Length: 338
Image (cartoon, rainbow, N blue to C red):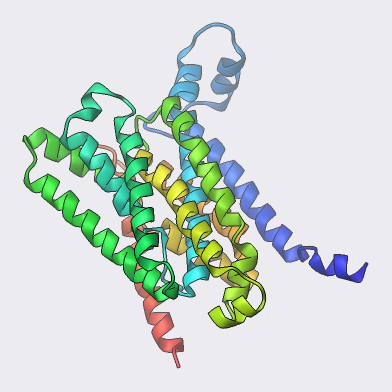
């Protein structure tokens, strides 16, 4: 009985996760109402249940609801993958782009725009983005497998550099200014004009990737003691790296393939909940996922409310918010370093 009780999550875990879930629910509701034109709650409620077509219901169901669902899913994927990668690499500055997955997905999407596939097939950008993410993860794992976390991180950096070079080459050789503009616009990240088609396309990959990442919980707890100690506790490090790399590829690759590059959410979300949850990596996973979804929903609502002519791009806003946090984190780590 005492052993079973010891395995139960402590009340603080439930309190933090419950509070984040309530905030997330409220922000999700706000994201359905907020925009250049705020929709009255009463009109929305009546419109959703009315058999007759009306403007409020159409805006909610066809424009804002799929956008909010994508923000929720992408934020969950970013927060969870950031927490897992920080646990696997034992590096508090790790984030989902560390393994080259985001850059690979971006390159795949850029290829779809560069060669004109996107003009003929609505799903060309997300599909080629997924292919790019999977190829990047395979290359990262092939280069870094067997050399420990440092080799894996270096392999990810090399793959990211290769993908960045490919993107730069596509911009340099863009056949016309319109193609270059489309590439740059997509790279800045956005959830605008996303539809149910995008939701249906990426949701299975995000769910599968997140499930794989959750299976790393026991392994990253043991890995916090060191690789040799983790192996002595029965952890298969190769299996752990496979789950981390390909789980990130599925979740973040699918996310990047639809939204473009959205930075810093995966870095910031785990650090926001770590002071509340302690430093056991597995306890941070769920709160980090909820925190990532909350941050991305908040940022997406902010892009609609900040009036700067055209709608501000999501990736630009998250970078503006996340960069000062990144500097603060580096300074804090430097002060606490031995």
